[in-house]
Length: 306
Image (cartoon, rainbow, N blue to C red; front, side, top):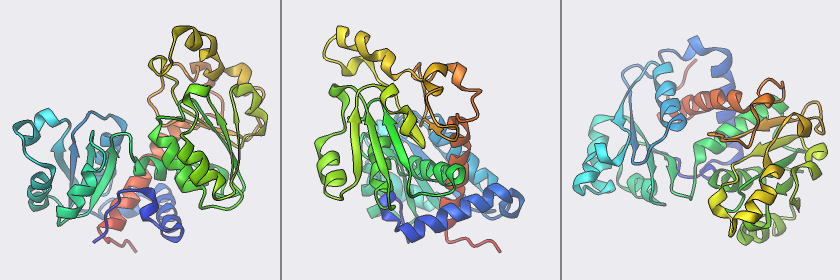
């Protein structure tokens, strides 16, 4: 039995097979419409979520399965003090597979060690968000046709953003990837990512402060939020916040085939005037999240569709 705690749990070959399956699901939804009839997905969400929880539920329903679960710790027996280990043992009696989001890092891993059904980490604190990374990889591969020889700009909060950290971990396994890290000094990538991942593996990267200084070189721009509370003082935030708002003027500096991604939710870091630009891929990205979660459910349940 296989679980998914990190995108690195899958080899590059397994990942490619999963993404190919997701692409086939996109092209032939009817072929998979009854693949999980009689199967149940438990969504155990100890903290609120919109996209991740609903896309898991949509994925299972699209496969003909059914869904049960809870959407916050308050609505589960965790509010009475039940442990994650006991919860997953009970859930294993009711469902065939479980997607778990938890505010504590490592909680889904603990659950997987006690579970008799596959467990998917749907986000654990600031640690991992593997299905977001799978979504990002599917988006890039589908829209750019490859997962190698690309220059990707990561913009915003690179210090605390778990989506950014997971994506870097996943992409350095592919050849000829280059990174441009766009952030204020306060929110640069942690040293362990810079030193242990990028430098140690001889990955080409540079760090810049202004979005305009990177736009013309990018194949992909991955935007994240810069939050006011991350700054040491208000003056620095006010001085820098407009550097990280993507608008039509900045888009004019980019290649015609660049794509813009964002894990969502956005606040004001991408102007709504960019939404109509054909290079804006963040809502497509949300749709790809359903396809990749369908593929993951089929893979972990070992369901084959001919």
